[in-house]
Image (cartoon, rainbow, N blue to C red):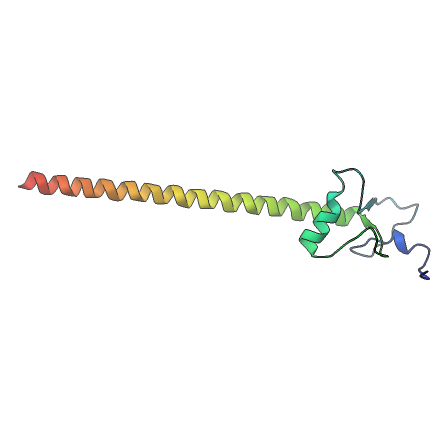
Length: 117
């Protein structure tokens, strides 16, 4: 058995801030049975590359501030992916217009040559 301080597991896993019983900041469990909240562990592993497990001996909570930052990472990632998709679609659209323009220029050129004869 480890000789950890009694309040060790009340420390935020990410920033080490302590939030005791009388603290106004929220302690959120990293592993929650509620599927909407269980994404904290996934976000920690995805965005911070920190492996978390319910079986490790480390604190299993994060503070509200760190949870908010993880949400911001997630929102930024989603925005970046959507922006990338829109930019790629725009380039494809622009290229398709370029192809049409080139075709029309060739058609007009051929018609001009044909009419000149």
